[in-house]
Length: 301
Image 1: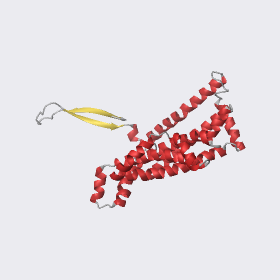
Image 2: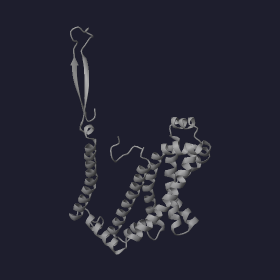
Image 3: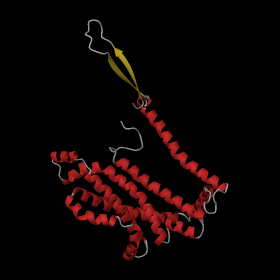
Image 4: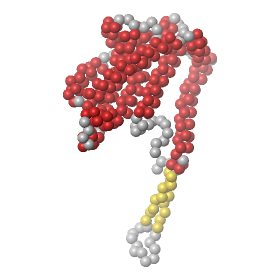
């Protein structure tokens, strides 16, 4: 058994008792350290996990720094992390980096908000209403498999140059991820939950508020976390094609000018932005769904 031990002892028949076959075996389970002191064990485990989470990227960065310093790799193509950090710090101090970060961030946030709202609405309706699902699912399935960057020329024709095509592309991408996860979550709600709601006389709104919403929301939030990362990927690719600012444009333009240190600064900013948005969605999800299983955090009693 996990974090526990088992001891066995035998008891024989006493005088005056009828012998009833072989001696009985009594199993005694003693709790392990993790069960006797769960808070301390949890802190120790979290310390190990945090150490591993920091040690692996730190080791890779040190290896990269050493390889560039010893010229195992060409530092003109793959600048050392110290060079990238110095250049990023200088660009941030000079105010050259923040306009591109803000341009990408506002496009991601606007498109993510629109795509999440539409995807959740369609997913909820299609998951709860069979006829709506029968009418719309074939069409949405066909649109889902279309590469989203292939729709950029369509959005350029619709909205012209500017922010519209970028936001529309992010919203479309996010919509499909949230729609699929929401529809699957609503359809996966156990029939016992629905039956309990009907027994208590729940109307459509009460069924949604007290049954479908709490039962499906954890899985919906998983789809929203995935969509947050994909939104960053899509906007960077879009900005490389049809934008005059943003991190995607910074990466593409600096590569064309052979400014590889600037290119890596943009890549690092994209990675940080994606992690921050994904973690923000996760933290919000933990706040609004305290009943859901947690992948991290304090042990639950």
